[in-house]
Each structure stands twice: as structure tokens, then as C-alpha cells.
Amino acid sequence: MEEYAQLISDLKSEDDEKKRKAAAKIGETGDERLIPILIETIEKTDNHWVRNAIANALRELDAEESIPVLIKLIKKVGEKHSGSLIYALQVMDCRPVVNEIAEFLCSENFEQRELSLQIIEDMEGCLESDKKEEAIEKIRRYRETGATPETKKYLDHALKILKEDL
Image 1 (tube, one colour):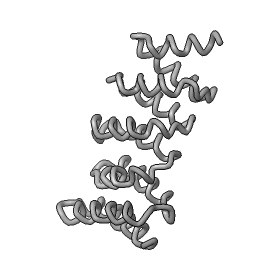
Image 2 (spheres, rainbow, N blue to C red):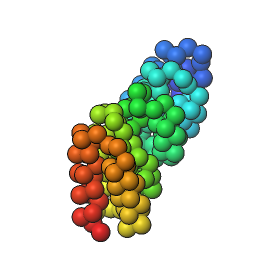
Image 3 (spheres, rainbow, N blue to C red):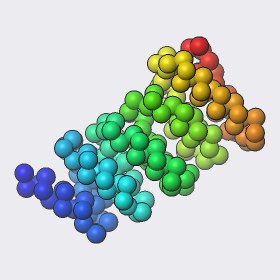
Image 4 (cartoon, one colour):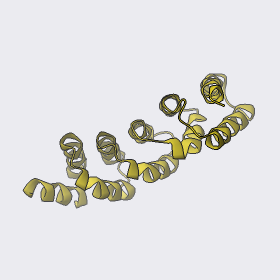
């Protein structure tokens, strides 16, 4: 119980290094009781190192309840610091947020595109047709309105995956 209390204390600390180390420890130990405090902390921090450590812990814990917060943060922080947030989503059931994943796929940032495409690949054969059609439409619109040739390759691959199941 003492370690549990210490991890909570460290996550609530003003010391970003303590927060980062606590998140890493939680990911290693797999203590799911700490998911709510991880979510609370990741929402409040502006430190991308702390955010990355917490995202990795949430991934290790397969904390699907964190999906809405991770999506919100990806949109907030933009392409530069979103890689670990999208990486955390890869082990979670992202079918309900496929449209947001499709939006991230439309990024000109390599890491964001690559990780988003991997999530879509993992959904192959598992999406409801209405969600799939919405994602296809979103990707098509972006493809037609200014995607670079490199991004178009990713978009085309995602469209192929999504269309195969229709």
C-alpha cells in the first residue's frame, strides 16, 4: 500500500520528473487502480515528457477509458508531440473513434500518419459499415483537397483496407 500511496503523491507533485518516473513505474507494475489519476494528470500537464510517460503507462495498462482524453490531447498538442499519444491508442479498441483516427491519418507528419495507418490496419474486418463509410468519406475529402503525394499513399492504402470490407 505504501508504494501505491507514493505513486499517487508523485503524480500529484509539482515535480515533473517525479510524475514521469511514477508513470513509468505504474506502466511496469500494471496497477490498474491508478488509471484515473493517470488520466487526470495527463489532462493537466503541459510537459510533453510527462505526457509521453503517462501515455506509455496507459498503453501498458490497455486503459481504454483513456481513449477520449487521448483523442482530445492529440488534437490539442498537434502533430509535433502526438506520437506517444497515438502509440498508446494502438493496443486499444479504437473502432468507436475511427473517424478521429482517419483525421490523424490525414496529417503531413510521418509519425502521426504511420501510427494512425497501423491502427486502421488493425481494425480491418472489425468496423461497422456506417463508421467505415464515414471514415472513407473523411479520407477521400482530405485526399482531394491538398494532400501531398506522400500522404496520398497512406490515404490510398487506408481506403483500400476500409473498402475491402464493404
